[in-house]
Image (tube, rainbow, N blue to C red; front, side):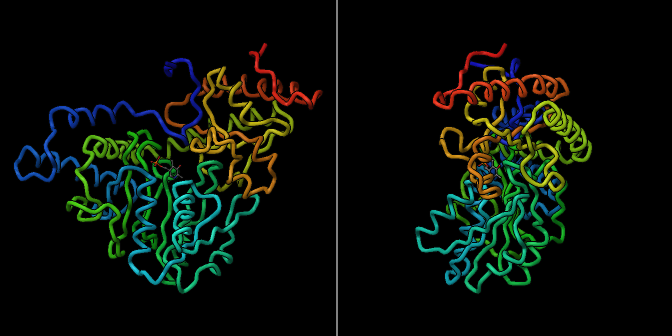
Length: 399
Ligand SMILES: *Cc1c(COP(=O)(O)O)cnc(C)c1O
């Protein structure tokens, strides 16, 4: 087993370390307070209260009302539930509009729905990673049930103008959902009077536990549950609550909300120092996506002349955890669908690496990464350039 003492963890968009304050908050709900929150006696009532406190904390993070929060098992479930609901509300509407750069929790689901008779429009993006709003507007038809566009891209960090898109959808009378799994807890979200109907988030992307998420359902937005059974979550998601994890999500939301601006500045400073250091040290390196309209923690780099899977192997030997595109694609051998959509350049998609920073990174992580990454890139280029016949790069350790 490799513990975290020796690693440089720069993969916070894949998952994050649990905040110790979150664990502490969760523990009593794995031990002492095991009552079923739906039971009538006081012993269970205190568990119900803890769930409602968590609901208020998540609502505070999003600037919405507690009654608009539905707890789910993960970001993926939240995404699936929003789209399934819209398709059930009006069975005559079987068209979905989304983008080509969504997480697989949207893309694969839409592809499956397309096989079952739905029509799906996957909007392309430009080199900066942006969708064309005119094109989006034109894609909406009378049969469109829902538009789903992510708030922040998990591979490049590029931010989408979701408020504007939601307004457009409201005018057209179409539901709007945003996958905000990468945005929640990292940038300020104020749903208040926002026209966004549905929003997904996931605890483990902001220092909460894995296997718990939430779906924001705007008040008065019609919603049909996907998981049907008991009356939990006000009839919007059946199944006995994952109490400890929900409590953990609440604590993680509270921790994120109390310091979001300071954290953003601290993490952005680290990310920028890393990027500037790499750009200085490595020729033929460039950043993928709009550098301005981006999450403060994400850095997606293209290194001309390298193969990202070989780079990941070498970086792993030096304890650097990062990824080529999203973690969900690792091992599939497929180049990033996000970068292919942006650049229509297979080499760029195959030679890119994502570094993502978080609360538990420090300047020393940046320094070590700045020592290791340029050496790895240089080594890969040396080993691959003179003899194209030997496609397999040498993987002995660095000098
Ligand atoms: C991680 C991620 C998801 C999936 O969330 P899970 O809780 O792991 O199911 C969905 N969308 C985006 C953008 C993500 O980064």
